[in-house]
Image 1 (spheres, rainbow, N blue to C red):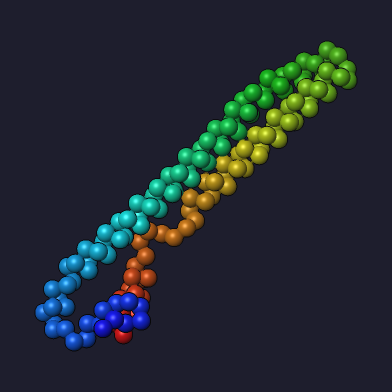
Image 2 (image 1 turned 120 degrees about the horizontal axis):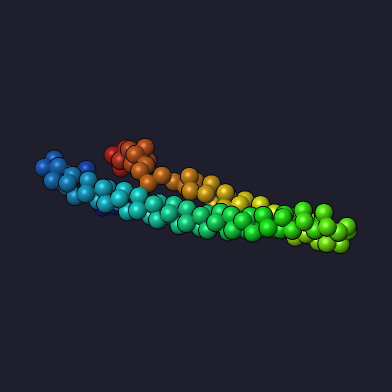
Length: 133
């Protein structure tokens, strides 16, 4: 006979039979927890890798923004409106791109801590209590 959750009704089995099933149940629980930990670690590593890519992209754009700032200063000192204004626009656009890339990377890093932890002892205890009732 099975219970509504699909578990076998073990109320008629002997104590020795129930004790004999404990190693298999513990093994299954440990394997399930290890698999959950592996899945969480893989997702966290993927988010960390993508976040790192966004931050590296932001740093690359920021690195090339420094010459644009230099061009702005030189052009601003050597001539008046068109040259330095264009250099300022280039610098502003590159700075804006760097900010967006850094924000995307930060948000991806922030996702690492979210999600369910792999080891959920309280849920395991609750499930065992439900089966026992």
